Amino acid sequence: MRIPPTLYDLSQPTFHNSPQWPEYEPTVMNLRYTIGFNGFNAERVELTTHSGTHIDVPFHFMQDGATIDRMPLERFMGPAVILDLTDKGPACVISAADLERFGDTIVADEIVLIKTGWGSRRALSEEYLKKWPYLDQSAAAYLVSRDVRGVGTDGLSIGGIGDYARSRAPHIPLLAAGKFIIEDMRIPDELVPGKGYFLCAFPILLKGAGAAWVRPVAWDVA
Image (cartoon, rainbow, N blue to C red; front, side, top):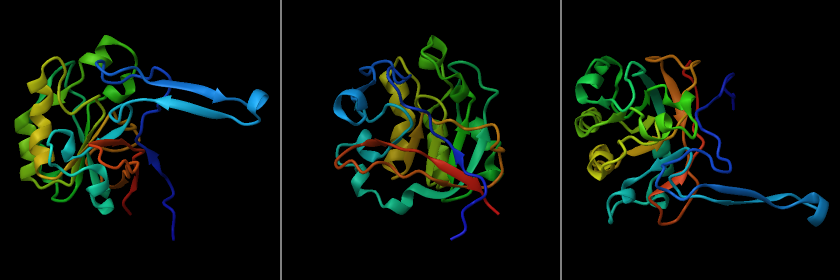
């Protein structure tokens, strides 16, 4: 098997008190056992399934929706394209009209990655935790109409914060159509918007869960 010459890591690191959805309990990560006392190092981590880079699946917003363990593994890999929406300012809405200008680059069964630039601002700041650009329902419905495989974003969520309806609105069309959503990504500047990539984003196998942590990896399509 030929290994691609360059692999791009699209995940954010998880650590003690790492940035996450503000309403969740903070992430706790401690060195619980040490070589000096126990003869080995082992960490204990406490966090929600939506902390750090993670994948949402239908059960997240639908009681009878598919859970992580019921989604076919092959669904979490495929061709990917990056859409440059770094022109969007703090707390700006991304609508269908914003995505339609990329219509020629959005192909059926492709994974669409929304780059807002917020991944490079990751910090325990009001800007990062409350003001990322987010999709509205029309944008999500447009992506469903283009039959994308999944959607990723470098903001904390595909939806906005401060209002449940604002957060829920873009999730429902995508998850109801059986799509997945990757949130809190890091989209490196080395990845060129509009260029073809292949993405693998296999989640941790959590039975009965609506989300799981993931380390997305992409490479150039030859």
